[in-house]
Amino acid sequence: MSAVAVPVAGRGRAVAVLLDAAAPVLVGIVAFALARSVLLPGQGFWDTGEFQTVAPLLGVAHPTGFPTYVILGWIASLVMSPLGEPALRMNLLSAILLGLAAGLTVVLVRQLAGRTSVAVAAGLLLALSPLAWRMGAFADPHTLHLALLAGLLVLLVGWERRRLARAAGADRWLVAAAVLYGIMLGNHGLTVLLAPGIALYLLAVEPGIIRRPRLVATCAVALVGTAVVLYLELPIRAAMGAPLVYGRPDTVDGFLYVVLGQQFGGLMTNPLDDLGQKAADLAALAGQQLGILAALVPAAAILVAFRRPRFALLTLTWMVILCWFAASFRDGVVDRYYLGPLLIAVCWLGVAAGLVVDAIFPRPEDAVGTPRRGDRSWLLAGLTGIVLAVGLVGPAVLAAPATRARADQATDVRARDWSRWVLDTVEDDALIVSWWSYSTPLWYRTLLNGERPDITVLDDRDRLDENLGTIDEVLRANVGRRPVYLVRYRSEIADVEARWEVEEIADPKGQQPIWRVVGPRPAGGLDRTSATSRAGIARMEP
Image 1 (tube, rainbow, N blue to C red):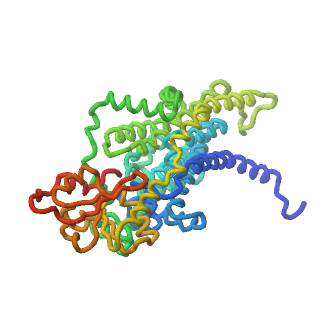
Image 2: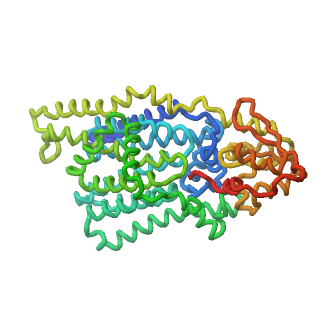
Image 3: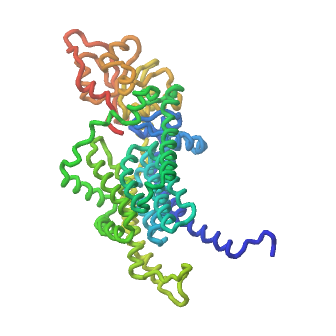
């Protein structure tokens, strides 16, 4: 035998590993392709425009700062630099993350159900759901949260399997889960809501874990240390004078303000209010995302609870807390907060399908895990699994054209066109007093692309951080010294016109106009500060 020949057993093991990896990889590629087909081609408004700017600049995003996403986005923007402008690269990152989430879903469901067919169906179902498909098309940290959440479940379930089997190195999986949880804390505040479910799960798998102080301490240090290292990005980059920094995270009060999301503290409603309406809204949302399969989710959850009780304890706790929070948090469009519950529901459906196959065809395995000679029930079980897999993903495939049409952003160039028009329109040395949705694409062009370095974009957030006062105070300090333009709601402009003469400049494509401030209105105008202007200082959406 040649010295480089591979033993048969080793060759077979290598082939098995490749086959195991093929399913999640292929599903991930399909999910990426789906997101790529509807990808936003460039700039976006609102938070999308912010993340497209902050990450390539390694700045500080709005609360809670999202350092994990910002750092990852900075790295991805560098790696993908040959692929186009920074905005496109950040959008592509979301498509990649959706592919990762779908692939990890395959791994997770196969761990729990032992059936590749239904695991593949679950991964595809996640990628084809309207919410996940749409979120994979533009820059946003929620898609990273989805991928990390799937990864956390893979690690926790992997730890459970190895711990119960008393396998060597099982605890490494739990330490890895702690590190990943720290990474998630650096990405989104929703991660805090996962803690109660994880605590219950750990106690269910190993009731005596609290009597293992070394393991508990190792996990705690790994978790906290990871999160601390990531959040250091905020004060460090602020102190370094990064071009775009939200708030004052280089001060203690400013750091806590950003990290704890204090500006959103008043947006939670009473969690016990309108429970019936919240349940109805949740059912409607489930129907929009899963179609007819939504009706099977409760039954799937019950079946999983009987056959995989510890996993059910973990995910059911998450489902209740996450949905309750999202239904009680009133801040713009929060449908993306349901990505976690969507992943859980898809996993329940996939695992339940695998359990149904096992109930019909109990696995005919001997002590070493191979089918008994002459027994062909494994073939029938495989065919049944394929049928159930088709049933899982089939409705989503049939609905794919309509879903794609709703998710499609491939022709959306509104932010690009509007921001270009504004920079072509305003005079030299102009001051543009704007608000969040329209500030972010202007920041992208001025701070990241370096266009029109002579102009200043003053967001409502800047007015607060720099103690510049109300819009009236900003106008009094600048009108007559430099050209001043306003990007506001029309209701705010009507209020400003009581004290200032303004000239509307219409966007030729019918988007948001801008107003040039000509000068103070002659005596007789009301010298007052509008409540609308004061209310505009705070950001409206996380």
